[in-house]
Length: 528
Ligand SMILES: Nc1nc2c(ncn2[C@@H]2O[C@H](COP(=O)(O)OP(=O)(O)OP(=O)(O)O)[C@@H](O)[C@H]2O)c(=O)[nH]1
Image (cartoon, rainbow, N blue to C red; front, side, top):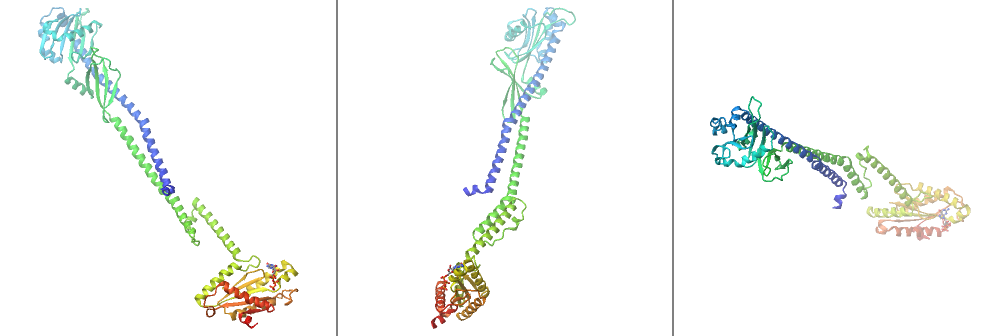
C-alpha cells in the first residue's frame, strides 16, 4: 500500500484525479449556485409573463362583455322597457334562445333606485324563467341579485365588468341604461351574467395558447402574490389571484406551463459538463502519457540502472538514450556519469594505494599475498610449479646510518627498478614486503630456474655498484636472496602461501648466515 502511494506515477495519478474531481465539483457548484438560480429566475419571469398574457386574453373577454352589455343598455327599447313603456320587449328579446345565443346565464334590469325591474335567466336546473322584479319565480337568482345590487350601490354611472365566484363562476357586465341619441340621465341598470363554463375556458385556452384553469378557493386570506409551483422537471403551475366578488371566495387563475427553457438550459449545461469532463479526462490521460514518456519512464530506467550498479554489475554502460537527452534528466544522467567516473577513479586510486608501496611503486605485501594465493591455486589446477624469492639488502642499517635515510630511500628505489627490470614478464610480480626486504613471485618457474634468475638479479644489483662504504661484505650495495619453489610433485599441490613464504624466509636467513651477497635455496641450504 505504502509502495503504491510512494510511486511517483500513482501520486501523479492521484493528484490529477484530485484536480479532475475538484474541477467537476467546481462545475457542479457553479451550476448549483450560479446557473440554476438564474434559470429559476428566468422561469419565474416567464411564468409571470404567461400569466400576464392569460390576463390579457381574459381582458379581451371583458371587452367583449362590455360591448355586449353596452349594446343592449344603450338601446332605446331597453330604456323605454325599464320606463315600463314596452311590454312586448320581454317576449321579443328576453326569451331562452336569446340568452342562449348570447351565452348568458342571467340578464337583469334594475331601476335607477337599484331595485330589480326584470330578471330573465336559467336557474340551477337549467330551466328558463323570466319575471318582474323579485317575483317568487326568480327566487333562485336572489343571491346573484343581492351581489349585483351591492356593486351598483358602489359604482359610478359607467360600464363595469367583473368576475363572480359565488353562487356561480361567471363574468358579469353592468351598464347604465341610456337613450342612444338624447342626453338624458340613465333610467336604470342592465346586468348580464355570463357563466364561465368549461367550453368557455376551452375557448380561452385556444385563443391564449395557455393551459389555463380558474379555481375558487374559500380562503380570503390567500396571498395575492404570484406563485409558481414546479410540478416536475417538465411542468410547472403558475397561479395568480384575480379580483372577483364576493371577497369570501378567492378566484385563482392557474396556468400549467412547460419547463422547456429550464430543460433546454439544463440539457445545455449537462452537455457542457460532459464535454468539460471528457476534455479533462482526455487531458489527464495525455498528461499521464507524456509524464510517463518524458519523466517517469526515463526515471525508472535510471533507477533500474542504479540498482544493477548496486548489485556489483559495475561494468554496465550508462544508457546512451538517457545521456543524450537535452533536458533535466539528461543533465542528471551526465552529472551522474561524471560522478561515477570520478568515483571509479578514486576507487582505482584507493586500490592502487592499498596494493602498492608508495616509495618504490612496487606491489605491497597485501597484493603479493593475494597474487601468490591465486598463483598457487592456478598451479594446483595446472599442475605447475610456483617459485618465490625473498631479497634482503645487506647491512642496510649501516647504509642508512652512513648516508642518511633519504639516500637509503633512493637506494631502495634504484634496487626496486632493477628488480622490476629483471622480472618484467606479465605474470611475475616484484613486491616490497618489508623495510628493505623484497619478495618476487615467479609462477610456472622451477626452483632451479628461479635460482638461476635470482643469481642474475644479485649480479645485476652488484653491477649497479651503489656505494656502500660501511658494508663489511663489499664496497657496494649487495643483496641476499632466498629461493623456494613448490611443484606438484614435491608438495602434492598442497602448498599454502604462508608455508611457501616461511620456507623462502628460511633460505634467505641461510643466505644471510652464510655470508650475505648470495643466493640460497633449499638445496644449497642443505649443503651448508
Ligand atoms: N631509508 C630507509 N630505511 C629503511 C626503510 N625501511 C627500513 N629501513 C631501514 O632498514 C634497516 C634494516 O636494518 P636491519 O633489520 O637491522 O637489517 P640490516 O641492517 O640490513 O642487516 P642485515 O639485514 O642483517 O644485513 C633499518 O635501519 C631501517 O631503518 C625505508 O623505507 N627507508
